[in-house]
Amino acid sequence: MYNIFMTLNTLHFTQSSYLELDNEFYSISHATPLDNPYLISFNTKAAKRIHLDSDTKEDPKFIELLNGTYTPKGCRLYSMCYAGYQFGHYASRLGDGRVHHLGSINGWHLQTKGSGETLYSRTADGRAALPSSIREYLMSEAMHHLGIPTTRALGIIGSKTKILRNNIEYAAIVMRMSPSWIRFGNFEYFYYLKEYDKLRDLADYVIAESYPHLKEEEDKYFKFFTEVLERTASLVAAWQGIGFCHGVLNTDNMSIIGLTIDYGPFAMMDEFQFNFVSNSTDKAGRYAYGEQPNVVYWNLTKLAQALSPLIDSSRMDKKLKEYGQSIYPNAYIDVMCKKLGLEYRFPRDRQLITSLIGTLQDAYIDYTQFFRTLSRYDGERMSIFELAMNPIPFDKWLSMYDTRLAKESRSQKDRHTAMLQTNPKYVLKNYMLDKAITLAKSGNFTMVERLLHIAQHPYDELPEYEKFAEETPEGYKNITLSCSS
Ligand code: AMP
Ligand code: MG
Image (cartoon, rainbow, N blue to C red; front, top):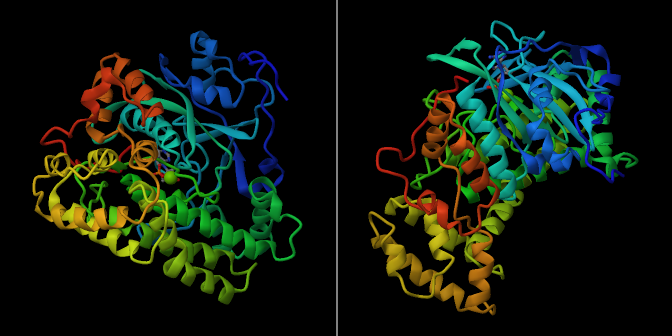
């Protein structure tokens, strides 16, 4: 137990037991520093999780820590090896092409993203551009405070190192932290190489670290698969509920402990559009918002295949069927009923939700604003109508909602209070992140700090930030981004 907060001088990293696995699982690596590094932001709330003093923000050594020029006690840098299905095609060797793990503190594995080439960089430069780094830093924090399982970020630095993307960009480094960085793709790597002993070692490592209650169970591998599937189902249900589109749901971007991981061309939907695709390179819409539960199912079938040397496939197939028939639908209905302020569950709630999705689709309405406004609904419909370009479909749906609300026993006031804690006032929309990035490029990080504050208080009324709760400006709705980062 720590009683005091650490400084960078006293901070002590523990070597991850991942390094006790065979050396095919990783490579010992070294970071390549950026030129003229400077601090963009330090996340005091994340620092608390590892007992790091908030004054660290002022310590120049923090920049050095991220830049790889200061290595605290206990650090041994390494990069992980993994594979993955990318847009449906198997890539047999991916791995941390631009990530260096430092070790762990208080159960959090810390790593730098963008810190230079590794054994797994292939033809790429090992760098991360400033825009995508700011996006990941802010969005992972927003997701955490929205109650959605996610990796987090401790800080971000910029630099004068130039890198080539769609344009010339400056390189940045984000220090990310997570209780596990293992992906479905780590398992696929050993399965397709037919290295089943190592596959088992990996499963044992993940169970010991992240599912320790299963360690002594007789049927531990099947139970492990079941829990991964359940966590993943509730993660996607949470994404659908909040209006988050990940953008690149390849199996190497699927966390084995059900976290949101690897933020790239994601988006929080502005106007509700079921088929919204946030990733402009995804022409087929494979990773469209409405497809996420299906593509995650597909990813789970790939995980089942990779685990087939350890677990009877027919049992996993049965679980996979349950994902579609009950596990995911129930998780989603639960999320949506909560958003609608419903305490009880009735079979017909499914219809109410399906009908709402159709209504939102037809209405041209901001997804976040709709639920926030509904959180104060007292039977007076005008406040909802005013949000929609086409309010007509809402008339019928609100009548259904009124009928359903009549079956609840909670008072309207209590329902409103609960809904205001469920439906955020603030989410980080792409146009806001764009503004923060444009300013950061000119050395002004005030917007990054503001968005960090908003990210950390999504349910609060923040009068000074009222404009960020308004409708997305015309021309900036549902903008898409490319994978380039
Ligand atoms: P991502 O799209 O960030 O999930 O990355 C997919 C794969 O490409 C991972 O194996 C990354 O490590 C690798 N990768 C992406 N960008 C770079 C880069 N600039 N340098 C090296 N590897 C990269
Ligand atoms: Mg990735």
